[in-house]
Length: 237
Image 1: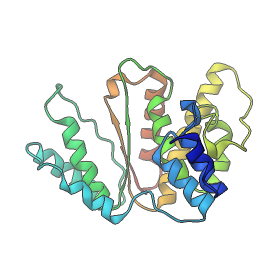
Image 2 (image 1 turned 180 degrees about the vertical axis):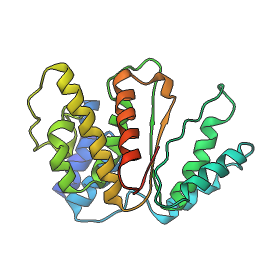
Image 3 (image 1 turned 135 degrees about the vertical axis):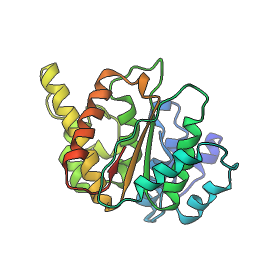
């Protein structure tokens, strides 16, 4: 959009949103669609949902699912069991249908209004906490003010530019081992409390786990421990 067209926008709240979208520096732009919706709701006093019934229904319009129906049925069966937390590891050679299986499982979850949180572990990206940073980015705008304030001082260390943390001061950095332990506890406690807050089942899907960095695996291990010991609520990996 030409500069003169931007300047012609009279509403300052709309201008702020458009300016961020068109910012010259990529790091200053919105990183996720949820951030745009959040800004529209905040600036324009609207209440748009991140997902609607129509968008959930649209997921079933893709190509038909061929193969792996038995595995999909097992996932659905375990998901439908009340008051139980589950951990699943799906493994197999490349190209046998693991990704498509979870695409279909995601459709099923979304049509049942079950939150499906997804992150990919990438071969040449060894950024610490990378998959969990992606998940946190996706859910922070849906989290309550209470848990954001409770864990924001630690989570800001791995999400320093997130808009919800702009007025939160990060806690002082500790020595490496202690710092790592505090962050792992903060991430896992946030996810567990977020899941309870939703008062519904939550699925966390980590794709290509073999590429995950060591610290992310420690986060996963701690999360697995927590969902196996807390009272049954809604967590599932």
